[in-house]
Image 1 (cartoon, helix red, strand yellow):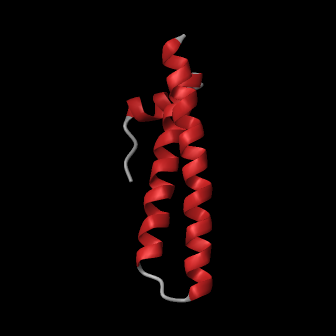
Image 2 (spheres, one colour):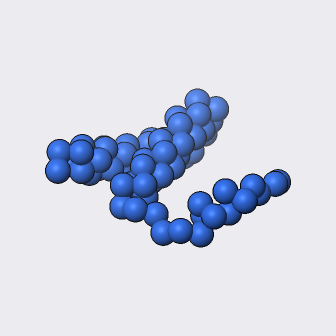
Length: 75
């Protein structure tokens, strides 16, 4: 993996609240996609329950973060 000079400089600085929120939204969206993908490939009832729980938990977090982002753009 190769780091460019700009990429290193970019990671050294503090993220703004907005940038941090956007990164958290991206990460949560990725987690939600993974939970849906995992659900599609399991057949064991216990694992199905686990993925349903995970999907619900991540979706709640995703909705919360989207609301925070909407609130931020209204300010």
